[in-house]
Amino acid sequence: QFPRSSLNFDASEMLNSFKAVDFYRKLKRDLQAELTETSFAGAALSIFAAVVMLALIFAELNSFLAIQEESKVVLDQITSVTDDTLQININITFHRLKCEYASVDVTNFMGTHDAEMAARVQKVHLNKAGLTTTEHPDRPAVQHSTDEVHDGSMTTELLTELTFEAHHHTHQIMIVNFFAPWCHWCQRLAPVWEKTAQTLAKHHPGDTRLALTRVDCTAEGSAPLCAKFGIDAFPSILVFRKDDTGTSEHE
View 1 (tube, rainbow, N blue to C red):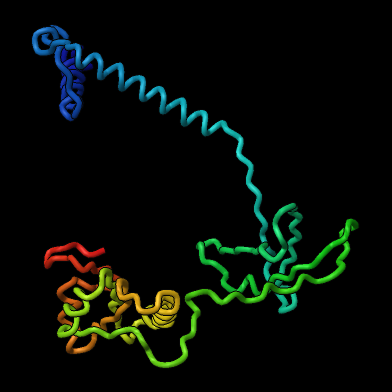
View 2: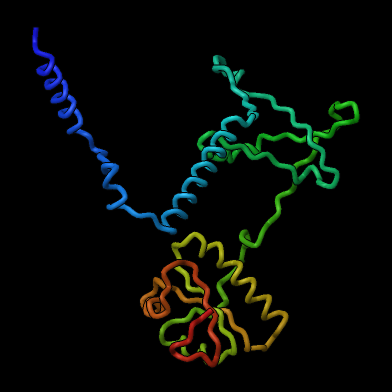
């Protein structure tokens, strides 16, 4: 048998060795009053932190207990070419919306739009019994301003570094289209630009207060102009006034 004092000594040594790995040591009770003190700011922050924690716990618990409804349509695996379509019947009534303005927008789970969906939508007129009466005719294509077509040569003045200042101080307002021939959007703007200039000339013949002009930023004689006015995107349209100075900010 081992003496009782020897067993107590070994247990105490093991306990002290275990406590030596404590990363969160605390002050002794008799030293806490001497080494720490309370403050109003600390008390306010403690109460605020406690309130925030209780609010977060309540919000998480409320969200966890809330009932949410979700509907999903899951397609079976397609085994035949004839089974690759899904018929979806939508019954929505808009009393003041014409059928020609109704459209369907479809996206997949990646958020990619199905651009060809509109071409596969068939609209029909139904009677009160829900039976098809007639098909709704497709809406005729509308030609927007971006689809303008200009016949003939360009009539707006093509400016260069040598002719720019002369035209600048001749007109009260000069609107300049800085373009590049290879730019797709410049090509679409060109017929609209020409048509606008012709319309102005038609309605205000002989009026030189306003002029629409162009600058080809790829031409050798015009490239310095584009660098001077900081043109870094095409097309860029700037407005120049007759009384502008060299440091004026152009619209």
